Image (tube, rainbow, N blue to C red):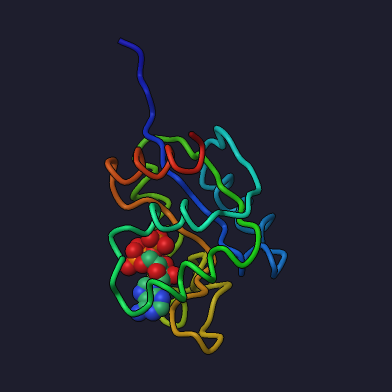
Length: 140
Ligand SMILES: Nc1ncnc2c1ncn2[C@@H]1O[C@H](COP(=O)(O)OP(=O)(O)OP(=O)(O)O)[C@@H](O)[C@H]1O
């Protein structure tokens, strides 16, 4: 049987695009050895974001998060590689960029800009099930 490496959805969020960190973030992903299978820049619709963040619906940060994520273009990446889901999340670092470990994308490039942990540069799917669901939203 042929070997199909795992895939995950990575997003460079609007703060990463606005700060011109797309190249830096992609360079880290490539140096780690993962494969960019597909990539596009897109400004998400409200519908896409409501689906993407459906697990957070009703939480106090949901509305501001959807608004922020639709405030400008994001770079969506279909990323492949063995254990890429956990591997990319390790590269990204903890959700809160203020305390994310140095060496990670969020730890090296992120901080609190006054809206708590919202502007944390990247998203990465957290399970095979979310990866499949999220890749369908962003890549159809
Ligand atoms: N308390 C909060 N206040 C503001 N924004 C938040 C808060 N918690 C989470 N977020 C935002 O919602 C996103 C999704 O939250 P989640 O808990 O799934 O974090 P994560 O799994 O580390 O991040 P992601 O799913 O984006 O990789 C976070 O990346 C962050 O942008």
